[in-house]
Length: 586
Figure (cartoon, rainbow, N blue to C red):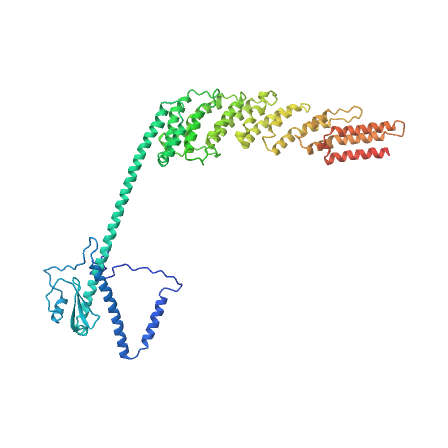
């Protein structure tokens, strides 16, 4: 079978190539074989020009001689390199069993008288490049001149057999050289792998020693003090020091999570049954503060409380104590709040919390807790527990007409605006607005304070457009009815309805107020002025009447605020009145 062995030629007798064909990079844009084809074509054209038979025979001999010379040079160089021992390798020797018959080539050489010596085990190579044949002894590197010319060998048919023998021995020598190089490479590779394995074993030994030391440190500096409730024990400082000394091992074995599990089981859980939220809303705050600081060791660039996602994440009922190790640090903190803190806080908010009783104390406590919580857990507390509880208070217990400080929205509801956010406050406002509309159904325009107490607290909470819409819907119809009933009486003018309207300056827009005045008051005022001027006649009382009219005119201008009188529709009315007075006086 033919097969391939590293360092040997291919083929049944190892007569093929030993080294693989090397790839040659092509750096031009000419198609494959174009340059070789052109050179070969030029060369063939030149050779075709030789027509003389003797010249052509001479040329063929030169080509054959050059080829043989090059082959012999390569062969001799290969022979010399294979005979030099290196390291543990032995010089190449061609093994010939003693029992075997000598090759036919030897007998043929002997028959032709090329050698009279006895057969030996030394390897002989025929140099065919000179007129006389040289025998090269591979073991002694000695040469013996043979008198018989090459031409005689060719004529006797031995030339082809010698060349075949030479090629076979050449391939065997090349195989030996390659095998020697391959063995050297294998030896170097084995030494490298041996050193690599030794280095790994040394690293594992060092890592094991570090891990054992870390284990003893964790037990003495964390586990034992937490289990014994050692007073004035700073757990985050101990964890930070361990992280500084064993950073890779600390993170790999999740020492922070181990410390948090110990704190939760031995310092937080025992306090849950004794926790009265109303009296101590911030109990266990210090323990949770330590937990957040421990979980932040090595992760100072990650904030736990900045995630406002509505994805509330974990279900603690689906998480066993062993699964905590697989969670990231934010989820561990979320789990700790959900498992312990939320038990009592949820029950207190739903059933035990008096929303109007000391509201700021509880609001500040929840705000401070929010600084420690993961953002998504705080969103869960706000949306699932706080917001529904405030909506229930609005719809069931809040009376807008109760003017006591305890019932005022700014004292118990609007303090949650920052924590709940505009979107949640808008939802609460929808429910409160219905109660406000119901309270103002029978509102008397003279009771300005009641309307202001109901409306003004929402001015900075809801958007400007929503507030203006509410004011227009609630106030403008009532004020319009009041102004329609106003009578213009120069002799005894009642300006109380006007004062009620001007009390809303800054709340109702100047444009809306100017439209009310122009449509329902100043039109009647201008008609009254014209009628009064028509009664003025040339008499002794004329000057006194003009003085009264002028005083009346200035009085009306003085009671209207400047921001309203500067409106174009209002200023035009007073200009018309002034023109009427001047025309009548002249």
